[in-house]
Image (cartoon, rainbow, N blue to C red):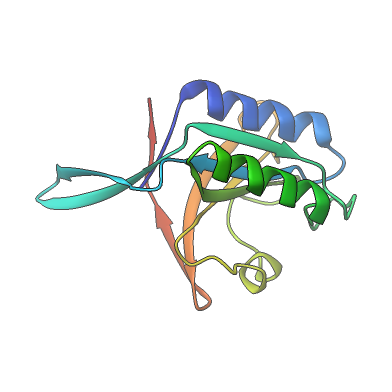
Length: 146
């Protein structure tokens, strides 16, 4: 499970709309140790997002994204300096549902990270979903909004 504030969700949706016609992308950071909560009869690990990084899409494409390596390195250093870690990666889909494409799956290099997708296919009613992608297997995870 990933935990995002309402403001984080709103910021991701707003940035996704602003970046169109290119996909938006970025990094989600939070404490290195996930919270644990007992719910629905089991212990759940919750990655809490405390900071979002709105990144430039170096692909400048409406169908793919690529974070600029220099910007990504700068953000990674800042995350470390703050004592945080990358807990997720997000990007937008402009014309499709919030579900990982085959391209997204191919580029899912971080099995412990959440992959948050914002679909603005219906701009009046955008959707935000999160997934774990491990060895090509896609599993949707719950988003806790605080």
